[in-house]
Image (spheres, rainbow, N blue to C red):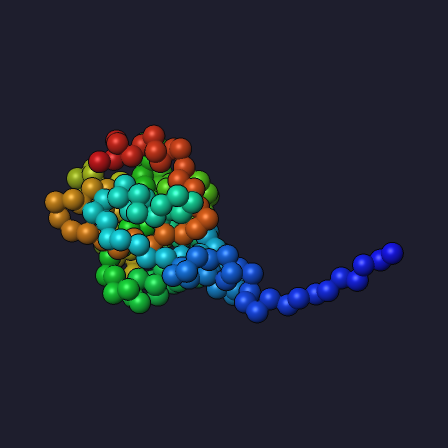
Length: 171
C-alpha cells in the first residue's frame, strides 16, 4: 500500500531556522555569502581573541562579496562598532588568507585605496580590520596595549589549520 505523503510548509525559511538565537541569517538575495549565520560577539584586542570569542563551528568573517561586506557593515552599525576584525591575515607567503577553512574572499576585496591599503606599515600589519570608512585596512594582529575592536563571526565556519600554524608568527 502507498502511504500518502503530507507536505508541511515551513513557517520560517530553512536557512533562518538553522541560526541559533541571536544570530542573523544570511539574506536570501542571491549574493555570495561565506556563512549561513552571523553574530557580533565580545570585543577583542587581537585577531586570536576574536577567533576564540567566535567559538567552535564559527570564525571571524572573511567577506566573499560586496553583498556580504554590506551585511557586515550593517551588523557593525547596528552594534555601534566603528572598527572590527575581519577574518583575514597575511600568510608567510605575503598573500591574505581567510582564518576560516574556505576560499571565500578569492576575487573580492574592499581595501582603502585612498590610504594605499594594504600597506604593511613598518612590516607589522598582518591582520585586517573594517575601518571607519567601511573599507579594509591592514593592521597589527595584536592590539592588546591599544584598543579593542568588534568581532562579527560567521557560522558554520571552521578555523583553518594554516591559520593555527601561523598565529604565533603574527603576534
